[in-house]
Image (tube, rainbow, N blue to C red; front, side):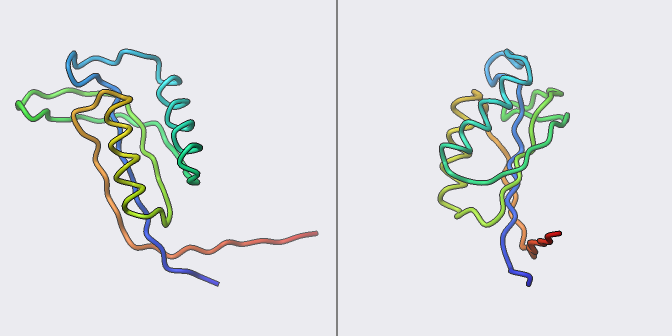
Length: 110
């Protein structure tokens, strides 16, 4: 049985908002993000990625980061989590996208 849900993706860079460089090893950011999701009591999947970002002042940086994917998490919770990520990772911003999706849980037993 398929259910309609929202899929939210949060894109998080590692470069510090003030210095423009990555301050910690990637594993530190990943473990912090996992800890945050556990505390918010939300299921998630996460992927490492690399990309580029233009700061509000027009400067450009290329950086490593994470793509956090959430299914059917309330918008208020997503917003709170995204704000916390900005603070903990010292980001100018994080990008949040939301799209409708269908979810099917498949189970089978021997």
